[in-house]
Image 1: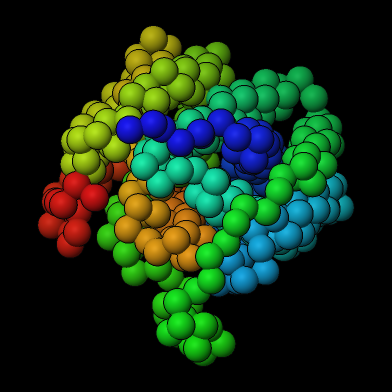
Image 2 (image 1 turned 30 degrees about the vertical axis):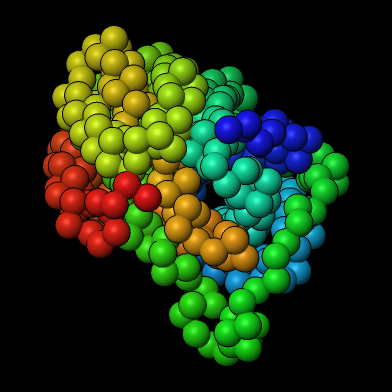
Length: 391
């Protein structure tokens, strides 16, 4: 059988756009909590709220976007979302107190939710059906590169320049993402099923969530919850254990690991089925979190980055591919929004709850508890419906 073309103009440009959106996302995830502490003398709990409110904004953005993206057109939604993203990134410069910072953070999250839902929908519409696992794996490498570059920039720049300079650099990156979004063409769309056309204006759960994507979305909620502990507090954790230099390379090592492994995991998902990839990913993530929690040397911290890259890094893209595999072609945007909404819920709950837990458990205790959560997630995954069919 001849493979359909994967590397089209749309696929390449949307992948680059997604990369730029995610650079800003990951950069801010690392610096916002320390910024709140440094600029406004916020407690760790409040700093966690400032970080986590962003993801509440994402939920608000995705909730509306997932419903209308197929109707209005994913390209129009992307352009609107990226310009909103630029505006809200610039607004950080005007946040002169903690309350304003929280408001800007929420709006920035909503903009990100709109833009990233549009990119996920366009790529789902552009990838051939029989290459979904492989295509999503390559596309999601844009997120992985951003995972390396964003936190690396954040940690490096925060040691040498003022936070306002970081906000300006982030605004330029966001503006570039907006600019290249105009070169994306609208993928072909199929009309909705008659029952959906009839019910689209009713307040139904099916207008906001794709049911076939919910089982795997429950898993990504838990997985995202645990991973947000690393994103939000690695800077403060590395300072406490005196491994700042190694921490600045953590996401670089993580990203290189995922870039090397993801093409294989995507092909294995298409060829061997869901369980062949998911179980090893969750196990490796759990072991990586144990090592991360107990590390005392830079080399061990980077080894944890390798394991977490093999585990979480590959599960994230495979989960996205799984979420759209069972969805009707006219509900790919809704399936994408459902998957990432659940991920966002995990990300939003994490920073605030962890900020409250850290004074009692410490950073090491927090990360060890998260490792146990992942081990339990393997059991949860096993018993969820539709997870054992290899779809």
